[in-house]
Length: 386
Image (cartoon, rainbow, N blue to C red; front, side):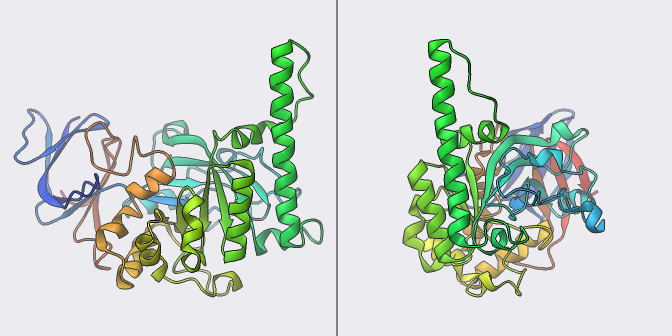
């Protein structure tokens, strides 16, 4: 079915376009046109007068479906602590697509998430970027694997009952050893194939890391403190990794050093106040990173906070001086670009997935804003407009 959203204040998030009252035409699963006074014979017309039309919101880092909500320990599948090095783990194998948080996400405008293993291991496993709604689990996947999760700082030190690592040095050493082995494994495979000799013995962990050392699979590096951020970046440079810094709680103290990162994902800005590593965390980070030219997105880190709380976090950044449009970018197009899915989501543009959400007010400026309409790939899955 074709759908025509009319007369809404549309934030396309294309380049630096200013919001404009106009129409959005959806043909099937894709956005077809954006403009004024659009018509389409047979289209379902939804009047969005007085409302704000945004691209579907993106939570660039969470653990939805892996840490199941309201399920107790039975729903906690985010950390395989039997080993400190688990690159072979695939987030999709631990995700419960019927987790109530998926519905909670899309009725609040969050249409796309990046989710996967937690941060107990120096090398945690593979993330997946997915929609929050789909008739089958496979339909929900946008990119898989989307990144290899690694973790620095306190979490890996305390998760293995005295086994390595127990220091930050140990964490870095485990990661380096695995990456060195993966590089050697890849070269041995290439040489064997070229010389038509037997391949090296299959190693599932190294197979998972080969795309990482070849620059084909990005790394999401969990790091709060400045020293941990610098260690992550040091390893990224050593192995020429495509790395984003996740949490980055003290990144605003060293913004110049973040130039090497392929993006930063900050947060959760309203969670974990008991965690020692976030003592210097601040919503001012958004403004500081923006002023220093560092592309950043905002995460919920669910179960730390709900995915919808990226809106509250974006509003807190505005309060501390981040321009409003930049705050929206941090939960739409910036997130899509860092996750490398901006060819499909993150903005309202012809040819992109028809993931669109409609609010009663600008949701990063008003806590009273309510999501009244959500579409994912052209399907209306939440409707309080009509």
